[in-house]
Length: 617
Image 1: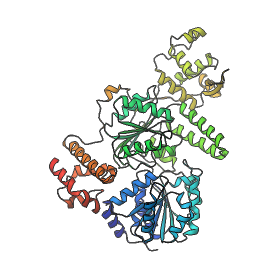
Image 2: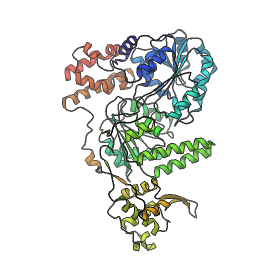
Image 3: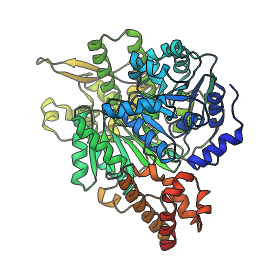
Image 4: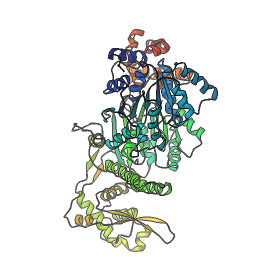
């Protein structure tokens, strides 16, 4: 198959999507589709993967079948394509029988350019027969990491896709994912049976994202508010570890006047759908969710993602945090970390493995992923560099200027080894019989009945670190555990309940003898009250007249979206609105040159936005 010339491809993209400059690797990825060569394309979230299979589909003869794991994800892409003047269809269980029959007729008549289906649908013989009745040019497999046993979101049904080659030997196959290590990439190629594929790996760095890892304090609500209030009236996602955490935090934020909604698997399906729709349609500022939320979210103007606890892998973190700033504008990713997160995840993973009969290799791989995530949270190296290197790429910058480490928000503790010796000596004086909380109380010299009853107020370590907060000491204890200078051990009491105690290790004694040093770090960011934080405003948006014009255009966008029953970003992205504010086009011809405004959208919305700019610019 001969690929169309580059000018034809670029003209088509400008015509439909209003995009005039392609991102790195987009064009080679598109040329692979156009030439009929299999491909594996790995680009970070926001890197423009979707365009890599959408654009070639409008130039190719025949049908492009897009395999997608979620109905919501399909709907967002189909709505976006239709708004650009491209005939696309999703064929799934949410459609009525009448709609599905109508779609089948359109497919047979060759009217559909892109067909979105789930992997389960492609396992049905009747659906395969439908596709065999037409010419299928290409299969685009989105979220392709789901096919890999070594990935972070393995789905067995994805492994059935390899059988499609028997039915469609002349079609090319293309795998797309945002997160894949070298091991996962090789597994994708093998499991999908890709034939001499073009392997295109994008730059995993997202310079528009600012990464921060902070110790989790007692009040997650207070820490969440400090992030939310830096981004007032902007969209954000907060991820929690458990459903109960979601419900509790969401309620607390509502009491603070935040428009927050919950999302987790324990909710009724209709309620989950309402939350998702409200967030996509920008009627809700904040979604508090478990990891069940996000894969189907195509909203590009998420300005922050907050993890209230550590995710279970760097792959998950890269994907979840990557939902911020997909429009290329600045966004913030904050991770609240506690040493207990590792043990919570480990316990859940082992329990799940035991109940499901998970093989030992998969379990070991899951623990390995967990360790890598914990390392990321604890090691005081550039966050951007650590993420990029984890996915097998070099990071040349000495200072990214967009993470807590490089911005100087985390510093080394002076006399760290001396501090560690005091903590370890306290554990030794307590005969390694107590947990983190009690050790902290002794070190702070707290006047507690439980301490006096045991006579522990007479210990030489009582009050040795009374000038430090419980949160600070807790974080240092877990940093020592990470460095193998302490250990945490599970015990069971007479009632059968488990509890944790601190134990000394060989390294502990070496530190106490002065033969080994340790490193401890602390955050330099001042903790501020919610009231003070509310006075602060994020610096990502324009100010003065330009900010007022942006708000006018945003309200117009919402009005037009409501009229058409589509999410606001389907009309125009925030990036397009900011460009309209900056350029203030005076003619439709000038407006046509702005990013994200193709001919179809210019015809639909151009005059209304032009009038709004003229009247308010």
